[in-house]
Image (tube, rainbow, N blue to C red; front, side, top):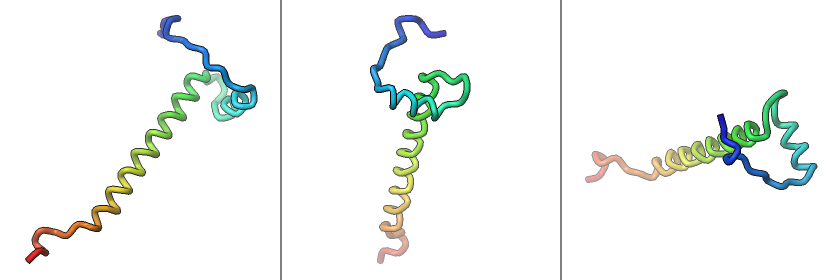
Length: 67
């Protein structure tokens, strides 16, 4: 359970609030929706890093191919 001191207010325009609400499921809090969006962005960034590493991997030459 969250303490009251852990809660904060973030001012946003009504349009943004309504868009945020439309992304959630019935009964979800704004906190849950925002947390879900953050997790999605973090996952996308992680996957982008992995794809970047795979692309860079093709630039490497195996040691046994070096004479």
